[in-house]
Figure 1 (tube, rainbow, N blue to C red):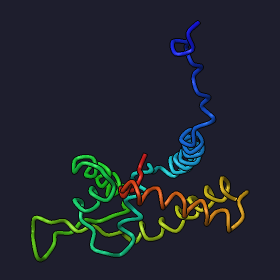
Figure 2: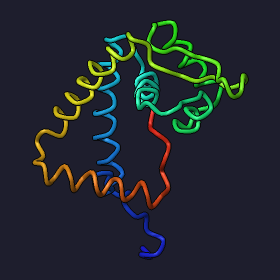
Figure 3: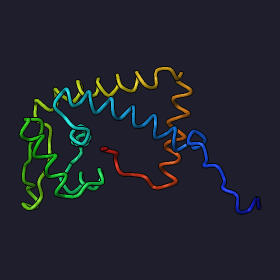
Figure 4: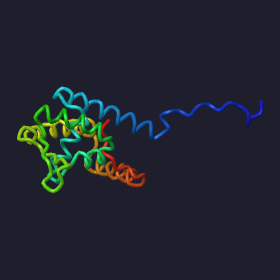
Length: 156
């Protein structure tokens, strides 16, 4: 048989870095999503709460851009958060077409509790790594994100 026409064996999945990144990512994000679901929230709602909670002026359009979502999709997320009493919307005094988003008192109380869940999820999955290993992993992932201009906040 001619070696040039011989069927080459398929590469083993485990030889690809993407396989390992995806395997770990799926488990980390899946566990976190389940924990949030127990609190009645989605990951997108959690991310939105965090962004709004940073204290800077946040608008639905800015939030949609940061999260890589359409205006319609972010509107649905914000409607859910507002119906749960976690955020409020106010019309900008400078431009009545612009809505400004803020955490309500209930949202401000919920955010630290939700952050504790996120911290616990990180500790569960990455606690086996020492501080230097965590810092190295974070630095490598940040480097790849920067090189490939991955700036949207992941929500799924």
